[in-house]
Length: 132
Ligand code: FES
Ligand code: FES
Image 1 (tube, rainbow, N blue to C red):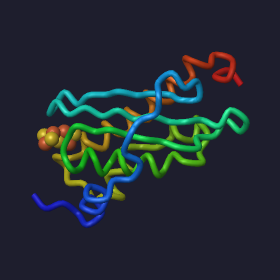
Image 2: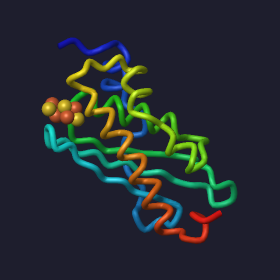
Image 3: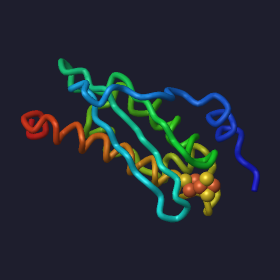
């Protein structure tokens, strides 16, 4: 199976690899695994407490090229978004942008799930803001 140019680009030059300290109160952490292949993705968002917007994101993915490319892409996409806007990112948009073949769709689902988990974690740590 051939990877698309965009997958190869994100795979060879992944954006935003790394992690924030979990103790940072402005950080939300999502850790998800893909039952289909055992790959694991950790994705973190850093929220600006003044604006409520995501100002930075980082990821670490132990997985295939498509999973790495999907997580790299979504760390770019979430920057500048509100938490609720970040929740609207769909795996189908990721799969389309990266031209993922059907057998790699679950890799993009992993990235969508990781974003949702990171937002949920942030909201759980900031109950008052989750209601606002
Ligand atoms: Fe997940 Fe390839 S099957 S890394
Ligand atoms: Fe499983 Fe890509 S093959 S995440």
